[in-house]
Length: 322
View 1 (cartoon, rainbow, N blue to C red):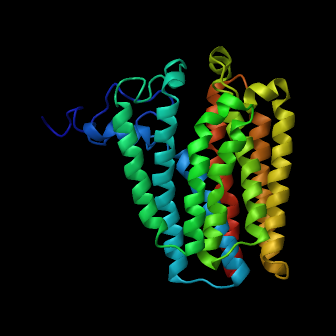
View 2 (view 1 turned 90 degrees about the vertical axis):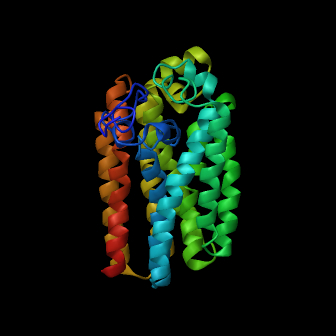
């Protein structure tokens, strides 16, 4: 075989339907690793960003609160990035294990590794454990309070895939799990919790309800056929109205978090408020473009939330040096 042989590092027929065309997993990763990387959604990095950004928000807000920064904080930022990749991968692998029957009945997800036969349930379970153990190794380098918070988050990760079976609000359960890093990163820096990261956590949950409702509109017809619940199905024609409420809640709670973290620092507050306003503009732009019946637009807007979340991250970082 040559280096351009598709069985080594060329594209193959196992690509997942909603992955970006030409992504590195499908074109460059060794053939043997592709099913595992697809289980981890490495071909769709947006989820890692959405898990990571609340971590960075919490860390930056904590640094502004204490007025201190060190090389240890750089490690927290890097550790959160690697940990987010690993835990997002472990969570997605677990989700694919529990949803394998549902995924096989939905057009967008039937190409995922388990229903398409690329990986067995046993292989997926081993891979989920490996990723979790690696992430736990990183967690052990943080403050004991952060370690305890990280362990506690496993309950949310375990429950989330089942939420759509018993509630119309599975996106809320995703928000509880995906934004836990705001609490963990704050605790990794300060060694304790505070009302500010709690408000930030709630802001993240509202943001998740915003973007994941958009995402869920891609599958609403298939979900209705197989009996899976979602906020997209629940809101229906009232989706824009609900998303507007989540937008307002996200910005209001984010602002509250900043005020609680740095109540006497006018410059920090001003810079941070500018970032929150800019994030709000981005969310409003998404809302204007949203057509819940256009799956391509829903996916594009969902992915754009990486940029929406990076905006306040940049302003919170700028506030530290303002």
